[in-house]
Length: 117
Length: 114
Image (cartoon, rainbow over all chains, first blue to last red; front, top):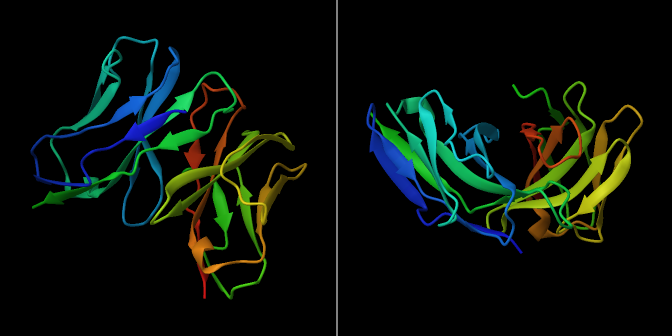
């Protein structure tokens, strides 16, 4: 079974600085998808970024980018120019392309990020 | 706003009771997923429906059931509620049931069992 591990329960960063959140996963599959979701205090789950495992190029979305290391099964999220509105819980998630799971997401435990003024 | 709606936002009930959570997917989305977020278990997949049919089951208790109606809205029924069922229940939707689709989440229903 696939697992997702986020080893940093909490992190903090100064406004305008850069922060990297770590995520590792375990799978025997070759093709899959990885996601970062953000959950602010409102509790809404918001998609931040998505990466297809067959693409070597790292995904970017404005100030958010990932470092996808397939061999190491690592998928970290970099937030540049951190803003107060980035304060949230961040979840790394895995989606299989094959097997019994039909596309459900497997989530890590989350990293609570605080952006300080 | 993801376009996925869930009602009610909050629900407080007693042990042993039964509740129904409702989800309307984004316009055009055929697939609906239910997830449970609790302090001890984190975010867990419960069940998926695609165009009215059950597609996959996760860690869903036998006391829980779901269905997707012809208009594509979905309901999650929780019965014989226990204190441990207190959690945030999310519905997510995607266009199809393929594994390439991104899931968009609703705002969640917070269930408190007293």
